[in-house]
Image (cartoon, rainbow, N blue to C red; front, top):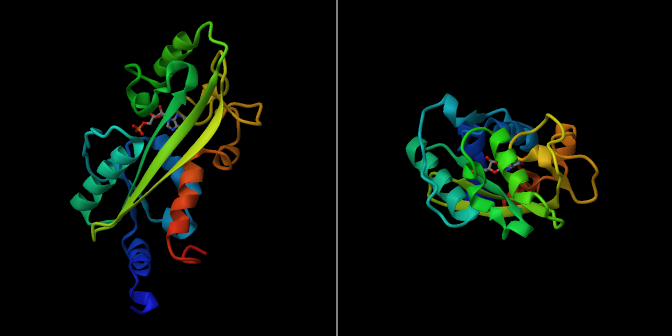
Length: 211
Ligand code: IMP
């Protein structure tokens, strides 16, 4: 097989030609991927709610399964390479809850879910937690790359900061003093579970294609 015929090279040509769908309705994730992805791909990143409505049921029991389900559903419907993220917050003292149910831990807004989590943490001294993200990048030929990243840290006892999304105001990454919501977006990008997972994903693609 000539190098230009390898699946990796074909995938890259396809990405650059057709662009990439981000299979999420979460604008916070979209903003992060726009900053994290190589510019050639970020410029062609499509936020799916702006394209068409489609609810993909997250019936998996792991982040990886849910990311795979979302990426496969979008690539099958569109024929365009699709990237999905399934992520969550795992709190050690809560037996790793809310985990894959992080988006559904409480009804309503991010603020409501943060209040829910603070309520569950009341009186607890072990405040260790980790964000976990699985990414699935799926191509029209049916192949899908899946990888995971993690960011460990601790939970605060009140929301701090106004940046980011989700549980960011409650989470201080290991070795840091500010919550994700207090940091500059680029500082979160240097530490986040999503950034770690994406680095692995890009390493699975052929060398230098995004240079
Ligand atoms: P998903 O759409 O099922 O992957 O939901 C992920 C949920 O986990 C989000 O709605 C947030 O509540 C939480 N989450 C994941 N990543 C982050 C992050 O980087 N910051 C804050 N919350 C996050």
